[in-house]
Length: 264
Image 1 (cartoon, rainbow, N blue to C red):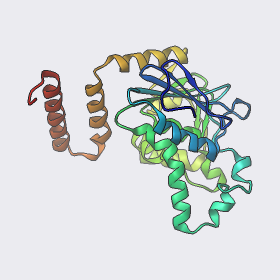
Image 2: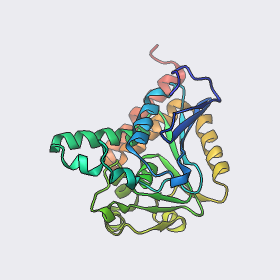
Image 3: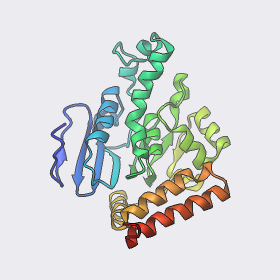
């Protein structure tokens, strides 16, 4: 990474780890850039994703996540997972339970920052989004799919469970029964089905154009209102109707006071 003081409109190099981000005013674009292996993910990429979350300027309001080449991400790089590095599956298996869980928590941090209430995150998905790729998209607030997009939660084919922050969002979007079926079968979910069952925010013919238009719409909206709306909706499933009504009242009171300057 370069210095924290990054000029707007510049690409930010990230050495050879396979991730970069570009800044265009309040919009940051994070790109997985290992197209030769369909953006298969490694622990080094996860470390860089987490690092990007700490490097983003405070005025960034929208983060777009995309993949370079023919796919969003083919998931975990099995050559690394089956190797003998510190983060290989074999090494993780020989850690103590608490050490293994701590290591996985570090991996999760590469994904979970995308749920930060101060930003709106958009996954621009084309081609395959498998396993870790699917979970990366699930951690984003919205998923805009090209017509060739395909999701798969393939961890079960390795005898593993999804562990990168995707299971709660998946169950919220499609319900626990369908989420169980998706995770147990590891089957491919085409864009039209993803749209029908609620995994896709939209399926579009022009992915870059649609994502750019959505990002522009978010940026044009009042920043305080966007943050309050995101928080209201994120917590809605955990609240009763009465609790949600109260949360709405409290959020609106804050907006009115901020907009009209009351209490200063």
